[in-house]
Length: 413
Image (cartoon, rainbow, N blue to C red; front, side, top):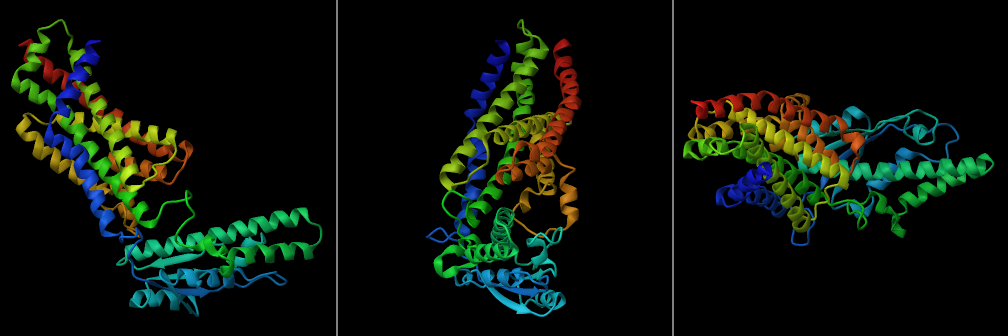
């Protein structure tokens, strides 16, 4: 009961700090709101210039194939519904397509492989369409990637349906008709069936481009400020030691382990409230869907452990509360930047950026939240969750003994 009483006292004390509340809740919501306003029109659609897409169709259908999938994909990308987003320019050869991007004549280049139709028909193991984008136009690259992925998903789904039909209906002629019918359904723009490649998704299926951007920014800013809250909560030991309340606690029938444990539990409770409020408000205001309940709870728990543990470790190297602000500000800002929190919406970043993020707890936490936002299950998030928790526990294992010796020696003397 003493442990809970101490934790509750800390939670109430921190909730009365106006500056902390602004850092915990106001800052991440404000930054996300600014991004949402900057990239949304009054109607709620992204105001992004049409992207020129150079397409090199190298697809060579097998002899007797009932369709040419490369041509079908090219037609789907050239649909009138996509004209405000993508302007398709067919070119001869992969080098010519990439050269247009290099010269700045195109924002992206798509190379359709030679075995594209064969892979869709099941006559090749796999085929990969290569997309090259201009790093100077990250927003346009995101739009093009989304449009192409939707087109590929539509073709893949239609091909799968056709192959299943082929298994059920006897005769190669029936199979060919099934394949042709499936592809017509996937690309029949006059009948409105081209929704499979449209930018706007059917209601309830997937968020819009701006909403996905807001979700990435919100997730990154939440992680950034949760780590600040964890460090601030741990530093309450310094403040109470300087105010004299910590030594008075030790004069009561309360052990040092209970006092320190109550402080850490109070910090964890504060972080849990912060995450819950940010997730709820951002879902209501920005329409962000954070993913499945269980992965969401596990990602939140892992973030709490990592932030609390990292805060304890940092506090072990700070001597006074006056030093804590600059120390926490510099370390958490640098690790947050290295962890990719400031570039969460960027595409085509060098591989070195991804590698560097793996050396920070923020980077692993962001990896888990990205998967959560994508609707992935616990299995896909397992590595990120385990590493995030392991980093937090390792920080606690190093920081807690240092803290315990430090904050009990002064009382014993």
